[in-house]
Image 1: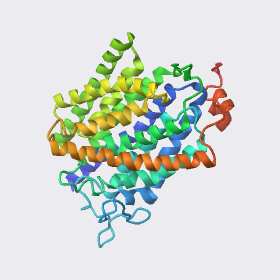
Image 2 (image 1 turned 180 degrees about the vertical axis):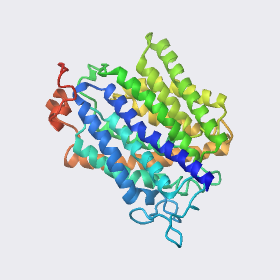
Image 3 (image 1 turned 180 degrees about the horizontal axis):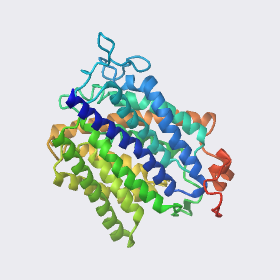
Length: 410
């Protein structure tokens, strides 16, 4: 009982840290975008965490963990039904690491993260209504179904060499990243982003806030990866936090160096996204890597960020916060890295990792395209030119985030 209590307290702390990440996402997104859209972005972030938790309670948790099922789709019923003893008390044999309630809450925090990734990529030009509908369907149905394929004991877990994703490089970050890519393609670029075939920078309005957001996310990753040990095991949790931090540091440093060599300026935003890229990259195998492996994975992720951001711009895709480069590209890299570095490295493991990446690409691209394309044809998903130029805060919310410091923006 004492060990369960210790493990459960650690898991609850990690749950709180993952919850705190939503503040980090909010700060990062509003910092890297223009002030006239601040309320809109904050509204979406609050909507995602509140509705996401409710949906995960009603259907998501039992879609993701359906018990015995065919490996692709299963459902254990609506709502939460905690395991009880014959005397009616909570059954504490559910797990050695946490109670049923802690399991739900920890996993529920992960679920909301996937839609938050999309929020940043579509910032400043997507209608709030269609986004909310998309978030409901994606968090409520697509994420838990996809998650069941691995974490729920589905077909990827039953491969001869099981697909491995410790804390969600693919299951969380790429799931959000694929949807972000589809959404950006269907939405088109913001007005003024590309003029006469040339890329125009649209600076964010509060880089200090974006920096605070990244540091909060880094702190939150202690819970994201540390909690994925699913107990307070001293050796494994401490190793996981070390590899997580080293990958983040390496990602930031290498992104800053590569960016400086290529563009001859010390770009803070690239430094920040390099840190996030390192964090996403290590997430799939944080418990399997040595410190040296973690530095290598983070370093490669940092370099990938710089080239991925440039490629996305050249493809005329407008991602205001770099979500596709960070969460999708580095998510894929981190997932494949499990087969190349650490305890599980082998040819068979790499093939399984590749199968996992392709499987998640298929369900995420198809589902997000169907949802968004249908709404685009029926109600439209992009705001009018007037609304975009004047700001979504005024037109969709009737509010101003900075009423005493209003500046003219174009």
